Each structure stands twice: as structure tokens, then as C-alpha cells.
Figure (tube, each protein chain N blue to C red):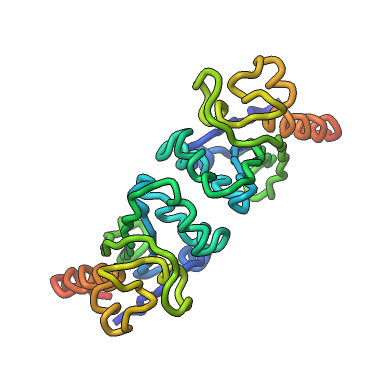
Length: 146
Length: 146
């Protein structure tokens, strides 16, 4: 079995890899804002904080949002990647719960923010879980020499 | 004199160019939002329109903004580019003037939106003019074989 390199944020690292690569990114789509901030959520959170993200929706009655996680996988250089996307519906609320992971305190799903949710429960329904599930199902159906 | 290729939006085109390259991009920084949308302004305008850009600032009393234009120039591959940035201070207002160029109807500078301003006046003070002026001054001081 060859090595499969997992890269989260360094494009130079990806260039060095000769074999299979997995990349992952998360987005947060506000429905009232035509899915913005979307992939820019990381910068928006850094610059505005969770209060500022709430303020973006101040003028809109629709506070619904979707958390999106996308994995992309390729078996090697010059092979088009295949993507696996998971989505979780919710709404943007004032922060509740421990402020450990980014925007999790302001994303509410069925009455609980992701920050308030028990880890086991969150890990069994999150956008990342949904994406990994698709990835896992696809891998199980392949016969890959990696 | 060699050819100098002017590219505005196609990264594949840039890769093909073996000689000198100039690139240009504009940003719109809302001071209340820690300079966002910044370089993402094109996507924000497309998805939200000028009304939506105003709504982003609904929760803030500070409506001031800066229009930013950046030119980058390199004499060839593997040569670090040099950048020239022009800035124009203003504030975000409800749209006024012909809706011809993007967010120009909502960017007001000294009482006039860029859309309302006479072209000659605008071209003599805009962020793009300021950036080109710096570029011109720098070029005049060089002895480039391009």
C-alpha cells in the first residue's frame, strides 16, 4: 500500500506530492445572501467574528444557512479529482456553547448549535460526516491500488 | 521592443506568457467590516447587487470605504512582481447615477458617486488613476529592455 497524503492548507505541499492526494474545505452558505460568505467563511470569521457574521444577516428575515464540507480526491498528478460533498441545514443565531471551533456557536441545527451539541451526536450528522460517508462508500466500491 | 501582454482574468493565459506581464485587480474595502468584501467584491456584487452591498452595512453607522486598484508587473517568468496600488476614500450610499460600471453608483467621493462623476474628473482621481500614476512614475525611472 502506498502513502496517501492528507493536506489541509499548504498548496506548495500539494505540488510536491507525486501520489494520491485528498484535500478538504468547509463553507458556510447564508441563503439570504445567495450562499455567501460560502468558501470565504474563514476570512469572514477572522475579520468579523461570530457577532459580525450575525450582523451580516441583520437586514434579512431569512436566517437559514447550510454548512458544507467538500473532500476532493485524486489518485495522482494529472488525474481529475473526484469530489464528495456533505451538507447540513441550520440557521444563524447568536453564539451559544463553548467557542472552540470557529462558527460552530452560531450555527443551529434542530434547536442546538454545533458548539452545544454532544461530540458523538455532532460527529454522526455533521456536514463533514456526510462528506466522509460518501467518500467511504465510494472507496468501498473501488479496487484502488493505492 | 518586445510585446507586453495585458491580462485581466484568465490564469491559463498568464501561464502561456514567456515575457513581461501586467495584471490588475480592484477591491472595495468597507472600513466597518475590517476591509471586507475587499478582493471578493466582484463575487459579492454579482450575488448581492448594489442594494445587497448596502444591506451589509445596515448594522454599522460607519459607511466609509476605500476603492483600491492594484497593478502587478513582472519582466518575465520567475521574476518577483512589483506592485502599484492606488486608493480612493469614499462612503457607501444608495445607488445614484447610471448603473454602467459595477459598484460605481454606490461609491460616493466628496458628494458624487463615481457613476455620477464626469468621466474626465473620475479618470483624474480614481483608484485606478492613482495606481497607474505610480506605475508610470516607476517606469519612467527605469531603463527596461522590454
